[in-house]
Length: 285
Image 1 (cartoon, rainbow, N blue to C red):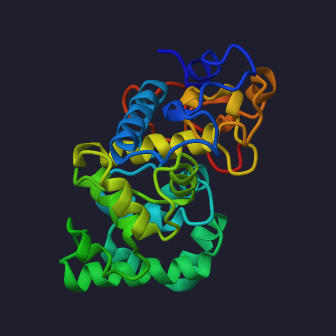
Image 2 (cartoon, rainbow, N blue to C red):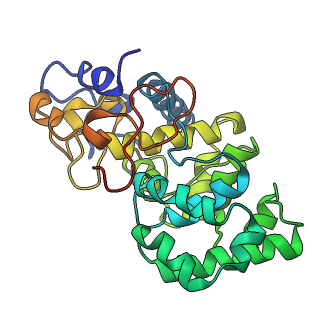
């Protein structure tokens, strides 16, 4: 299997600007993109991303819905790698909601300190664990309305859990996802819930979860916030924002970000078929 790096950088042989998406002559002269054209372009981008990132998956290590819920809460304002380096010790100390609900806040804060914002996160984890114990018999619920009723759990976290622990399709709007879908002109919305609603209308429900993974993978590796690697991007011909970043292929290659020296993910305990080596434990990087 070729890596995303190989797939991405082999697409653009020169720094010349590709034809504008949808055949537009220029940003000023182009007619508004029709709904049908938008849907077709969006779905083609999704197909291209599926080829570039065949291994796209949640980059948080988990073995059950509770572990994924906790890991997702911890992932705010930090990397998935840092969370994956922290959760083994956390789940050894608190393997169940009942255990986490009963732990001393100071003890929990010390364990999760490497993830940042540890006091607020500890409060959320104890709160949601208490709610799971008292309201859901210690089980993570499989409904959106129940998940978002838990302390510290919003729609993004709920959709991560539903899509990856319960097989319920959902669109996860994190900073990467929102940035890219606006850059691709799939939506102009800024509020995550409105972004989620608009993007959901472009794709069949069965694609929602994997679409989320692919877009996030692309945002982390190629389509960065400040310096997108346009010249190394496999979907450049479909992107209306081509040229916002470096278009020279060789220079763009240097902007590609592959965690931990080229490995395609941030997992310590990767799923079957994961290409590359697991990331190192905490303190080994």
